[in-house]
Amino acid sequence: MAKFITVGYGDESGYRQTAPDVRNGAHAHDARLKAGGALIGVAGEPVQVRNPDDTGVQTTTGAFMHSSLPIAGFAVIEAADLATAVAMVSKTPCAVAHGVVEVWPLREML
Image (cartoon, rainbow, N blue to C red; front, top):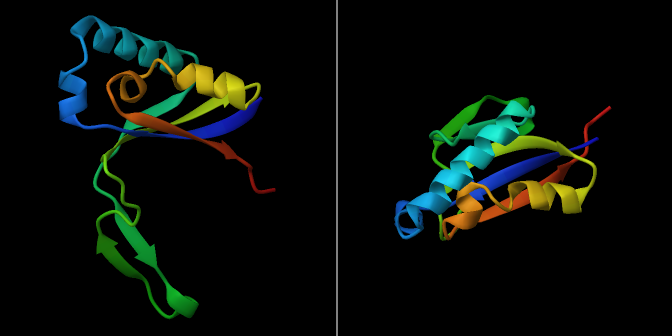
């Protein structure tokens, strides 16, 4: 099975405008993904790490990437292929609550 990293973007406004039964269904879907082995988490505050030319670690609080919606969470899922991974995340909270989910194929380093 291939592994995929997913990044969910969404905000409170989009979440609140989604019908409660749709939201509840999306949370139940996340629970099923987790029960099936997916690693799912809510995004915390990021820290940027730099070490130019190995001269010393520099950290900056905050995201490096920027988007119109905040990052809400991440997951690592396993699926047979990209189409299956897309289907797996299409019912998650960010996907159904006016947000977006990116699906990134993970090519593991050997």
